[in-house]
Length: 89
Image 1 (cartoon, rainbow, N blue to C red):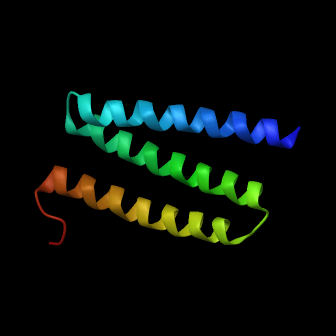
Image 2: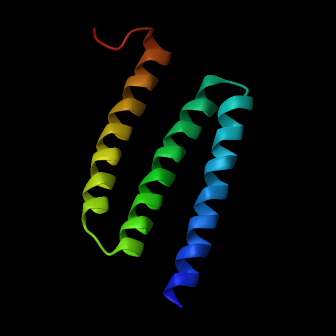
């Protein structure tokens, strides 16, 4: 039963990634693109956690924490670049 649930979750998050990629390419302004990138980071974190559950190892949970930290910093940096034109003052 858990295998079917994992397969369904992988499919749902994969479809979510495709929608985010579509919004990233078609987005009318940069705020939509930033939101799509941030949502893609969240989907990657979810996929890593699901893969860790499937494999039964804890290394993927640590990798998801690293992706979360890098995703947060990159989102903040990209927002500052769009708002101010530079990242470091």
